[in-house]
Length: 290
Image (cartoon, rainbow, N blue to C red; front, side, top):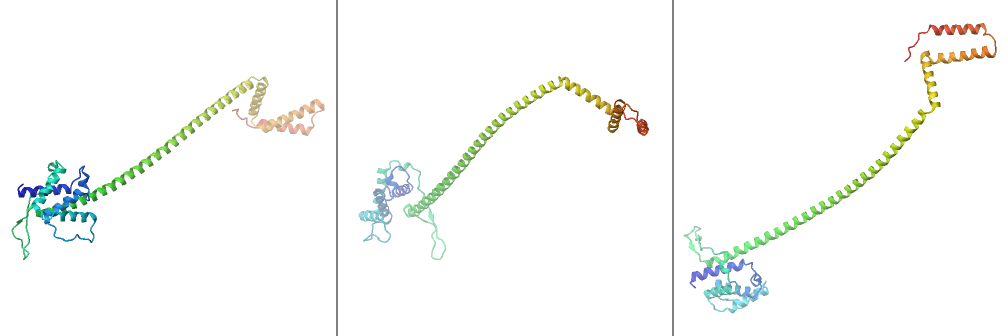
């Protein structure tokens, strides 16, 4: 491999491993032996041979200590050889990693400040020099994606809870509506039966009343009583005043008793009083019958 090609493939392999989310769990697990080998080769390719005599003990995990031991074991392996080993190991594990979306970025030029604060013409940076910043950017993107994924999970959980609560409330309301519908249907059925019974009672009462009225109308005594009452009403109407009728009837009874039972003539004062009363009644204006 040529130097530029090795650096480009190495940078692409590093970025591929940083963003890998495929089926190989040994590549996704940062504490696996393969990932530790890749970390050691990355350190050797970017920093060179390990110059530390002992590993750092403060805040170092077992994975960090194992990675340091593997880096130390590489000895004086050259940077280019470490890159080639890194690429060959990736080729052995993932056949089609080169066909994945390219993370290669052209080596740009940076404006580096001079001592006086002014900028000098752009100084080209190699891909290896820019690789740590690219790895940091990838790590930041992964952290942002992780945060967004957590936020998405929280929102999904809240939406699921809200949907479940709304569904439960809707189901409960539907059950209450069904209960009310059943109660109303039973009430209507009961009222309909009561109405039918009342209609039957009313029909029976009307039939009994009709039969009784027919019997009353066909009765001879009732007919005679009604005819007498009609005659009496007409007599009372023609007289125009009830009291006159009563007085005349009383006088007629007194005359009948006096003439037929006592066989005597009326005294002169009584006869005069009767004549005066009859004259007064005769002079009163007659009322028209209705």
